[in-house]
Image (cartoon, rainbow, N blue to C red):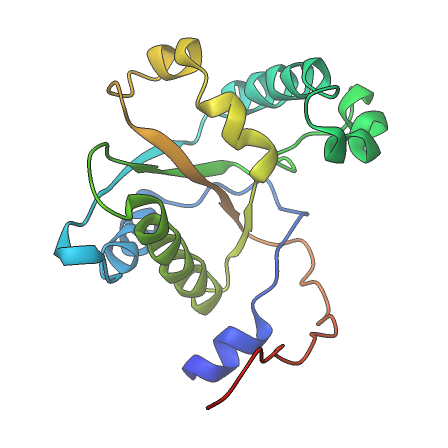
Length: 186
């Protein structure tokens, strides 16, 4: 697949088969992720992989409960209240794999660097006929001290990009994109 084709055709997938992505394929995704550029070549990323469906369901339920508890603090989430209250809604869309990209502490621009790694991972997954979706709803929950302790995430590491990966049931159609907003061109 050509790079431009991958960039233009990659979409967030929210419907997956029950097939688990094998370890060798996850390792290919991680190998692509670590090829991302980073400030001063600090490579400030670390990865956690969850391929336990029961744990992902539990974390989905707990994430929804947490999000409902902060609706008054984050009013933008109110439009999702019905989904968070729906016991059938899974924030991980029943995907069998979650890759969490963590930023190591004390590195300059580590969040941005992790975002670059995430893009490499998602484009590589698309090239391998896998679907991905960045699950922003999970980020705050994954950064709770008790959750980081459960997952044995070192102190100071921050979950930046929780990305589900799996085999798509359907490939979403392209959506219209806006032209670039150019503020100036001198």
